[in-house]
Image (cartoon, rainbow over all chains, first blue to last red; front, side, top):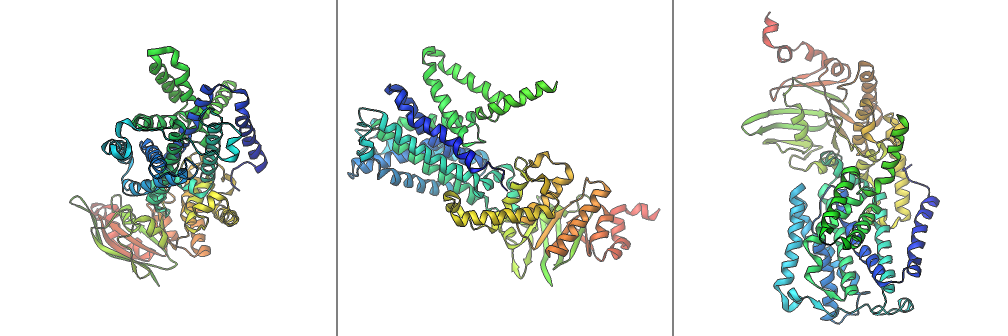
Length: 327
Length: 257
């Protein structure tokens, strides 16, 4: 008997937020707010990949590099080879990022701890440098302008024009995020999830219990690359622009922060962290020059008081109350 | 029948020999004790056999195959599984999950099965759940299956260490000081469980232990290491009378006096 809730409670628990987010555009009409939700969706998908790698105890600082690979692959397939935008290019771009993840991950994962983090960090830089070095192919520092919006498909057409309205993009990213969450949830519950956690808990013991730790870390990293590529490919068609600065080292670092801030313990931690911190950058705009100071302070205080991330807030409150009552 | 043969195993750390020219055999179905004073090389020997360290010299043959250079997860796959001296566990995971980790070896769920929750995957999971519970019941841990490993009392943690090992379906289980830190009653109960591991599950055991009495009580044969060298091997009653062993344990002077 696994310590999980029955299917009915679980189902309703997910159904309510799902309905809420599906109906959201009925209340939220302003493009700016929908834009924020879409950005949160894009980065959540990539951050969920980082979180999966982190459950096995590895720090992935190269996720923006995989977003870039996904983004450029999709852009170039459309601009140079004339593929119809997004629906066909999205899986191809994601799979290409996966392949790169496999090629880089195998040698990188034979190293441990900080070295793996450094290799992923360098990977992000190498991808960027590669983009800049071949401007004829990638547009270099100017980037690729006029990446077309997705070809309308029957269902999406009813939601309005992609270029004019944010609604079709909103539903697309909502669907992609839901898909990512289902996959990540399944992984967490499956033996793969348990094995990944066991590696981060005690690698030597895991080895002695017969776990090929490099193989499992690689599986996590490759899955993360897929979702990095997916997020990147969507984002270029949404922004209709593919530019090296959209996938910088800062993006990689911030995504790791989203995951840690939200909490690694649950898949919703990564989404919550991304949502809160992206909203915070927007909400703190009025503070002008102090924006990053306040932003960083919020982050430090949260991590100090909630080492398991923002997602553990209810649990921390409950424990706090229990402690007060105990006195 | 010889299950494992260790031939001339030598292990240097820097210039210092932790093991030198150690030879011995493990017979199928026996409980082999491994004793020796602190620093005799017992844990090093385990680390070499289980593939965590590579020996400087010598080889290890298991069921007729040379396994000297295999990585530890591969050694575990072949059937040699070890437990650790201190209660090494997956501390932040439940007892059930701890036992399930090693069980993965025998699962057919695979990644796709887990992702798509296929019928085969579900059936496999039910089977594995049953088998994990069987191991937990055997180790008398069923009542704490949902507790986090780090919250368990010491004796239970030790039992869980063995449960993790059993889940990997070993043929040879290497136990490192399984009853250290237990009171005599706990130790006796635990030794009974270990005997049942051999008798009922047909697993050959090798056992490092400091406590002479426990070793003599349970082991069929005993191997004695001192300063990385094998100084004696034989039946418990021979070992307790062996002059070299007494010297190694008590020191020469005391004997002379």
